[in-house]
Image (cartoon, rainbow, N blue to C red; front, side, top):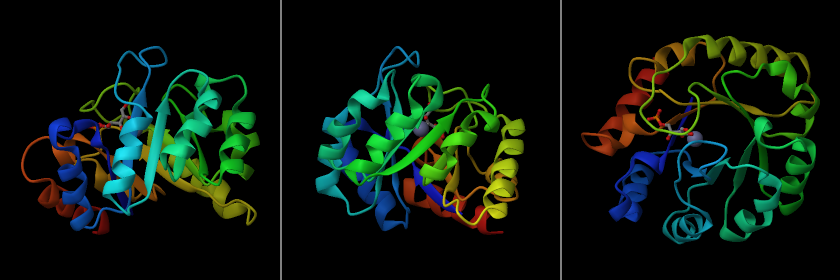
Amino acid sequence: MQIAPSILSADFGHLARAVDAVEKAGADRIHIDVMDGLFVPNLSFGPQIVSVLRQETTLPLEVHLMVQHPEEWVKTFADAGADMLLVHLEATPHIHRALSLIKQTGMEPGVVINPGTSVDAIDMVLPIVKQVLVMTVDPGFGGQEFIPEMLEKTDELATIHDRDESLDFKIEIDGGVNPGTIKLAAKHGVDIAVAGSAVYDGGNPADNLHHLQKLAAE
Ligand code: DX5
Ligand code: ZN
């Protein structure tokens, strides 16, 4: 299982250092949470942070857009240097258009579903995505509690994926991943786990990441 540290819980005063630490420790990608205060009840950062981090790291940058009408921001994030753009089904009536636009720019398209959304709702877009992100908390904040029932959805996605050779997406979870929950996730078809507070909130980020990697591999 890959681990994607989320910089939402990093020290914003030393963001470059925070990314450097996990890159050296073997992080697979960096997860960047963009929030607009409307789709989720919080604000975070925008494309400037992606541009800055693009200069700092060679790791893939995946941008998790928690904004209304994500299709309006696709070009901006492509220009900023994002490698993957993840958009919520719940944030637009035009999810297919949003994902197609992402693909046209050369970024990898990913679709995200909130805890209240079922896998059925994204059935029609699975052929065009490279990633499906199953939220294991309601988005908006780091440090929330993992909702274990969401792993029924990762199991379902793994079954769908294995049944149909034409599908080519990774299964990712985001929210509440920590040493206590990552082992369970590893048994339920998860390819990539996002971890924010478990990496950056207390202790040494490199050690925290190694600990999670070890548990995920057990
Ligand atoms: C939450 C964000 C997450 C957040 C996860 O809305 O999408 O990526 O950083 O934080 P933890 O790992 O602390 O739950
Ligand atoms: Zn996220």
